[in-house]
Image (cartoon, rainbow, N blue to C red):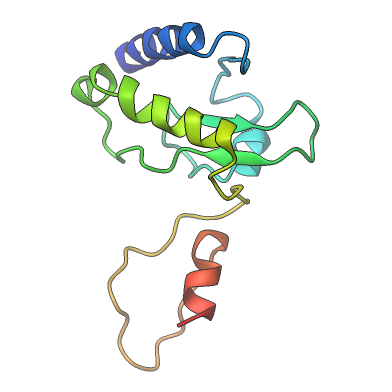
Length: 129
């Protein structure tokens, strides 16, 4: 759709900014869904952005998780800076790798005695509480 076109333009511009430092590729969301899950990206939230330290299956993967759930043209038209910062952090080794995870709960504190669902993205936070 329209957001895909705008997202591709932003990523094409970023690929020029990072020429020689990293490779970029576009993937159809309906193909290779296991690849998206390996990056720790939430299901069904596309366009999405992720990076990997190499092409190997076991390479470290990094998901851009600051993507709004309801994406808009305005987000993508202003996304160059925030995505550039994300890629710089990946290259500098300042990010923790992402892991397969379901989307975390909405953040509201459940009633006392309620069993909480532990997902990979929140594991350390919940265990250290």
